[in-house]
Length: 362
Ligand SMILES: [Zn+2]
Image (cartoon, rainbow, N blue to C red):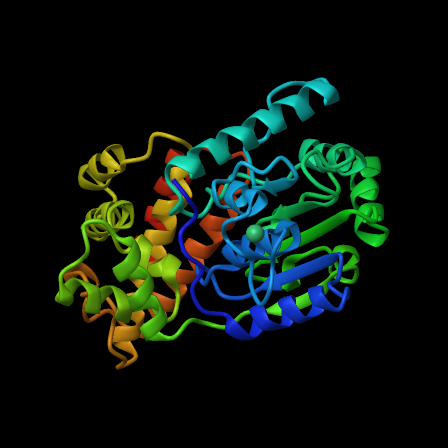
């Protein structure tokens, strides 16, 4: 399946097109903006522009490079996404493993172009840095240029065990090979290593309009949602297609699990909470952070309600009428747990501790 349509960001597109026409497109760009507004999708559009053989104000969409990019099959487009830490001990084996993980992620995205954010445990480790450095040194396969997209670049782990690999990457960003472009994306430029940030030209994206979100959902969701459902999704999205998509399917499932867990926790940390814990629907470690996000969202809705603002989703009964201070404290606890979940912790244990903490502050 092809990539979903790129929605909005007309100003950014014009700027990219003009810069490219004048031969002034920076070789290292950092696209930042809220979650789910299409930063990596714009990066892909940019790659398509760079590789297209008949571009004007936009990529032609029909030449061979365009078709290959849209099918995520262009040999000179390297879309680098966060991956689980390689298991091998040998650095060369780790690079192979990283290449395989990224290839698997791409295969997944070819099948399901409307992908969810990568799980909270994945990162760009040293093996990925080495992989990028190696591929950047190769000559392009298809044409004369190659493009690297590094999604969620704030997950670039620079220190770890190998400063050489980090330095190799920094050197690449400082002096990219003449035929190579790097497009980094992040929701939070402040989390990027300053040494990387200072080497990239920033491009900031804003939220989409409601009309743009609506148009995207109408064109993309299959089956098309009924009007009431579409209204709900657009209202929830706040200009983020990603947020709207998370309110369908998988996201809903996590939300339900989060609510029943919160309810059990608030009844007391006894058997009910343990039962709820046992029923939490994660199979992979990574899905755990999605659940934590759903817990944070649920509490966030309750906090909005307590502050007298309209909540996006209905506030579960167990949380209704709680005081704002407690809810905010609870949110801080969830954020701490979310942070801890990036490390090597036991999710079950972390959730049990969090449950105790929430029962205390709520
Ligand atoms: Zn083209």
